[in-house]
Length: 343
Length: 295
Image (cartoon, rainbow over all chains, first blue to last red; front, side, top):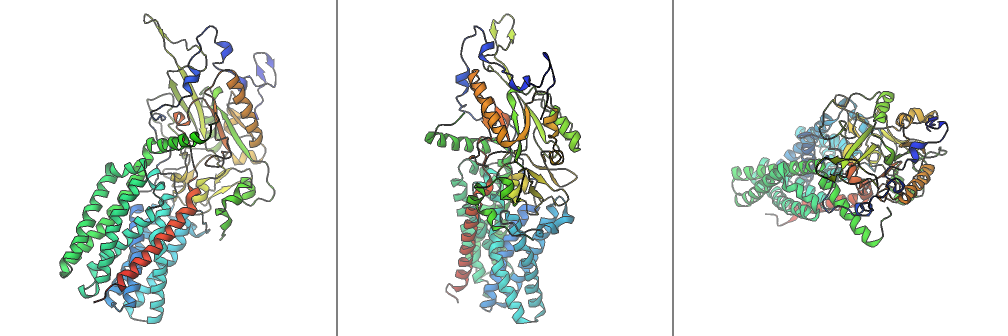
């Protein structure tokens, strides 16, 4: 603790600075009494420190992190599609979905490692298992998924050990469920307003987007007579993705507005156009191999755009103090109506 | 590998000091900062002392052009940040002495200066979300990054509701105030508090600092400075109270602080429930895609 020993009055152990009464009444003289009480009234307009953001902006970058969100969904969705195709004897859809799931898992891991500040320490992700960290839980899902989806894909391509291959396929599908959905908690478990405030709806947006992308890729790569389930997944997933995104933006309140601004808005609009066109095309063109493939890829691209849009909406909401301050002020105001604030 | 399911048990944590809740059997009292901005003179000695002691590199020689503040805010290379706010209102009943000749009018003026720092939250989001265990709770109840473990994932950065921790460019790891873990471990006070010439930054046992802050608030209110308020002192706020708290003379957002910060992991159990529900919907959707009217 400080010991202020030299003062105007000589050597002491008192702390005049700490007790200073800058602007106190006794120094005021005949000055009119005003101001102090008025300053207690909060400003109607929101204030900030020179317009600077309150929270620090995520250092995560595109394409790594939105790409990771997309690829994680694609991997999980494709693993489910592969398991369903395996069960119903659609062998080409099964094989190609297994390869897609594995490729997406490998690429998403690469994206995640690439985004690290210290990529050479990526194994530290598996140093602990921490339920309070969605990234830790996600690492413990992604790591086994990567291994098991490799086994499933390689055994299918080689045509060896069919029982082991089946087991790997179904295990990958089981792990694909958390893989496709946990990324919503990953984003929402931050102080970024346009991510956190969507924590109730975002998991549903993400699984819909995962189904849409996996289904879309399934239509694109599988022969027509095997692609009916993929088509249903793409169309239902895509439409759900669009509708749920809208619900999420609306329910968020002010932070939802970041989705209608700048880059986020352009990506969300592109997602709407691509997904809607792809869904219509997938239904109308279901007897045409070419139209089906194009429609599938459009739905896939729509899923990409949704992830990019959500990613950028978060960044935008982190950059503008309005999104942090105004909802918190409102929260305080509502709480203040119930109990007096201690100032 | 450690699995700690009780970390999600908020009710359990509420009954404990941060150190005890983190598993310390015997821990020293919780230490912290009380930053009384009413006596801050904006000298930035805290910024300099922090940089020197902790060997924090240069944080960009930028000219902000907005005030005496060219630091801008807290980050990987700024662990103390002195905010300068110039306002056209009086400070209590102080005469500003700012007059314009011929106009016959006195312009109100007050300067608010405040030295910001990591809050060492009771419920620290950065610590909660760190996937490597690099961020940890010390025996003093403070929150510190272990730089030999941090892999630069960056999760702590958007998790912090105050915008404190950040990634160091060219290094890749996350850095922030350690409350001078090395100094306090041997009974010294942190560099910033040591250097503060007005005792605006006070270091000590948190309980004692809280009592001292309450007295100071009463003193200022009695002197007619009704703007004075404590920030981060309340153990019932959204982060369970700050280990480093403040006396402010205006709304928190005026200083760039969030008015009602909440630790994001408070909602994590609900997030996981929604994730689980969404996963179930995905499974149902996938099954439905295959069973519906097969050709």
